[in-house]
Amino acid sequence: MRHAQKLACLLLAMLMIFPLAACGGTGDKPAGTDTAAPVSSGAAETDPPSGTAETEPPTEMERRASVKDSLPNVNYDGAPFRISAQKGALYEIAAEDITGDTLNDALYDRNLRIEERFGVEIVAVPTDGDVTEQINAVQQSIMAQDEAFDLASTCVYVTGALVLNGYYRNWLNMKYNDFDQPWWIRGINDNFRVKNAIYTVVGDMCLSTLLYTYGMFYNLTRGEDYRLNDAVIGKVLDGTWTYDYFYSVIADIYEDTDGDGKHGSGDFYGFTAENATNVDVYPFAFDIPIIRKDAEGWPVIVYYSEKAIYAAEIIDRLYWNTAGSYVPEGDYALPVYMFRDGSALFTTTWLQQAFTNYRDMENDYIILPYPKWDERQEKYLTTAMDNYSVLGVPKTVYDADMVSVITEALNAESYRTMFPTYYEEALQHKYARDPMAIEMLNLLMDGRTFDLCTLFHKQIPRIAMLFRNVINKKSGDFASLYAQIEDQSNSQLDEILDAYEKNAKGD
Image (tube, rainbow, N blue to C red; front, top):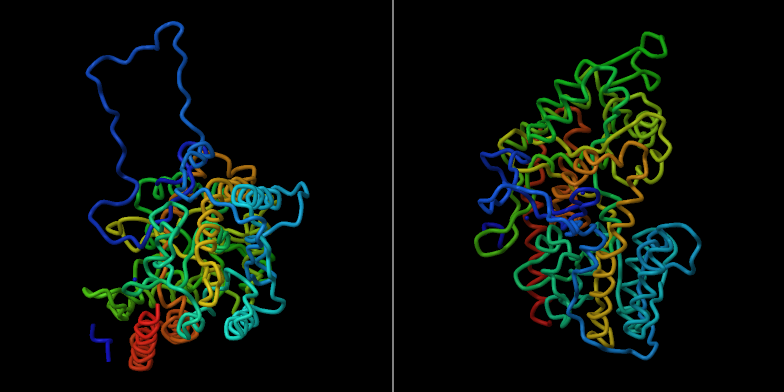
């Protein structure tokens, strides 16, 4: 068997949005300490000559709009371009009309531009029910060769079966897709590539990758009460925002707010979180890969390490043995509401909360990156919850070139207009428009990293869920649980790679 063989250039000044980076490594220089020195001409700086207008730098929207694609000048004479989507993810695909809602109207305008440019009609093909029901519908359609859709946009953690069963085309064989362009998320696509095949890709039309990105939300109003704001923000900006420092801040912050003498949800804490999906983020934030490619380009499981063992121990302590933490088991909404209501200094959750529950939050807050493992870690890292969308082209599609053109156009237009609109909308909170707050969000978005195990969550579930399961056993014993699943997980990965080899022969 094979197992012996993975808002910087974001929004600069006021709105620097991201190209998405792949997983960062470790290095001697903390992130955030480099500053670009001005280029000197050798002459003293002077005011511009009288009558000479100063040139304003382009806005982020202008900069993005200037990034052109290289798509051909083609017209498809009104042909429908049909996209299979789960009903709950239609905000990525199509809007029926202009409504006055900023995000809806941006989506409508994006599609209209593409429809007018290429002579197509973008049509959503929604599936009722949950994400698994959509996967089943996509599979049945491809098997029946009914050509019900041209592109499938499906939830990542259930999509592996479509890849392994050979239902999708290899994106590397699609004629007009340029995965070096900034609208493709290389941090995902590079990790989902096995040798010369990528069967699912992610680009900026997959707006869920923004909404489901995990950040650390910090209550500035309460932080000021503790005289912490300057220290916390200074640490983030100078690259020394580490887990040890974060823990030293929150460990003893507790107030018996309701006066009942018991630790409960009515009190104030340094930290609150749920004990499910946000636990999955810590290996990513600490630069602990689950699957990484070997020298020959084959993915191998590399999870087990002394670093992973220690990471489980410290997160176990954070969750279950720290006076300043409150983690209600099985109640995923309560920590969100506790932070919203000012009952916690920090929480970890996805950015969609900035659009919803935290939109009208009374206290000021700021979105920080997750802390680094230590100061040697090169950059701040995070990931997205495993509900984001991935794109696949059915093997049975009639006009693969049209699919290639329109999919490239959808992602390019999303890069130029949709992501800036969402970013701006997320920053409507009264404090978040401060340039420093934007810089914090940039640091977070620039550090998103991903792993192949997310795509094959159903096929190698025990390795994908390992860290969460260790923490929820309240033992912190990573080594023992890993030993129980090691052989099975390696065998499951081998089966996945065998399927890639088999499918590649038919491409």
